[in-house]
Image 1 (cartoon, rainbow, N blue to C red):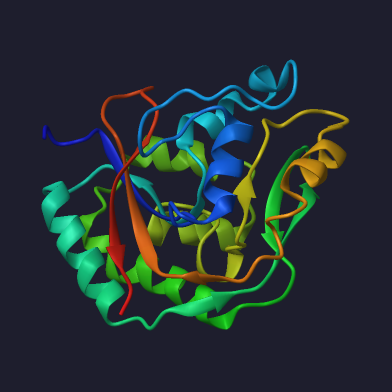
Image 2 (image 1 turned 90 degrees about the vertical axis):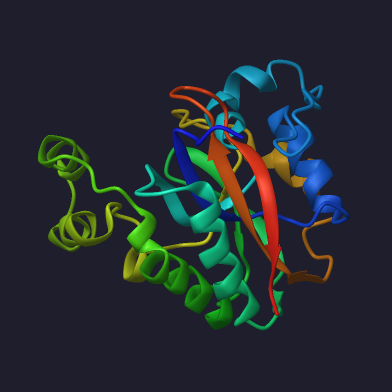
Amino acid sequence: MPEPYRAAVYYAPERDDPLWQRGCTWLGRDPESGEALAPPLPGLAALTSDPRRYGLHATLKPPMRLTGSLDALAADAAALAAQTRRFTLPALQVAQLGTFIALVLSALCPALSALADACVTRLDPHRLPETPAQQAARAAGRSAAQRQLIARWGYPYVLAEWQFHVTLSNGIPNNHLAPAARDHFADVLALPRQVESLALFVQPAPDAPFRLERRVALG
């Protein structure tokens, strides 16, 4: 396949996890099959356009331009995954985060935090740094700690600033979607699930939707 515009490493529910289908339906797109899905509520599609573009996921290594090939990134991601034991994810819950809603953890998960940190640091040689102007634009209005993270790792919400979340809506003032989301996900959030793989997502071209290109299994 042609080299993508950007690539990212995400957590995504396994395809046989009911959360995958339920979440993709909420967002209106399956990023693995490319299938468009009918949202469960009238008007929901207009309120989920941003997360639909990225696909159902929680970020581990944020989207980046690559210094080399996608295959090289995939090989290092597979090596990292093979060295990481599978672990149980705490139950999820719908939460309001500022002006958007998301799925978040109901309890701390040190194994997941360690995996996210490893993805950021160990896969960073594959990240093509942004220009000084791009970095400055990204750093505008950020805290000193976040500016330092941008300078070193290219993104403000990593390492100590990272929080697991699966975005479910655009940023919406007076966001009213949380009750509907709780109803939609009610019977799947507390199901036991393991983190079994890393999901490699790619953006084929600028402004194109991300797609799930491959999964690499944890050890």
